[in-house]
Figure (cartoon, rainbow, N blue to C red):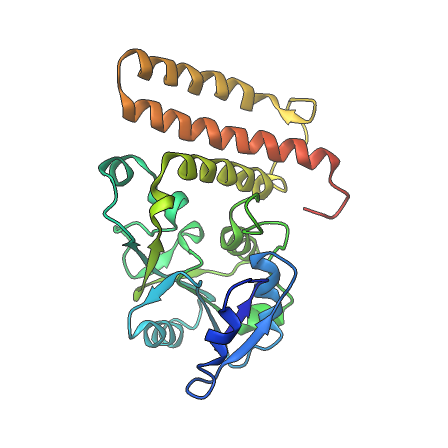
Length: 278
């Protein structure tokens, strides 16, 4: 077990090392902030043929590792394995959170409709995933310019990684018994937090799509012009929802507006980034 302490300021080191007499535990400290920086630091210490990944706010079921190992043994032609991510609510979620908020982008929860079998790569989420070590032996690493790093960042750490692997022919498998619960704090169920999440999602979508975007897309000051048209559409939806007292319509349109805002923010930042930073 490799645990990376990414510039924490609490008792993380003391708590983690207290388990070293009971677990085969490697404690690492990575002072440069960024989830993908921390993941890459851990890869230098990997042993074995399967790297299983999770987060500090994920609670695995007792046989989570067993299920990942069994799937990897049973599906030798697959290199990526995505498990189930269920919610662990700190408080009872408001009804609007359950009904209106997209659970994948907002809380990294997998759709309940997924079944054991081949998996679309965008359903592989960080709290419950595994990758064969041979992938990293080939030189693949996580992109340090995307994913959590402080409070302002482009979202999509694992999504960018598995999409990149997909382009190189690596297939993904859904492991239905490899379940974790993702701890969702009370403040993460507020409109302000969720709508900020939409901005981070938009930034990630733009960054991940840069290599696929056609060079002839019409732009204004470096920003794809279609984004402005879509903002007008979603603004009209907000106004219509306000006039008709449809709170769900207003919230969903505000979510889409913030996703678009995030794309515009990232497009603006991309204009001034040095070559090779994306």
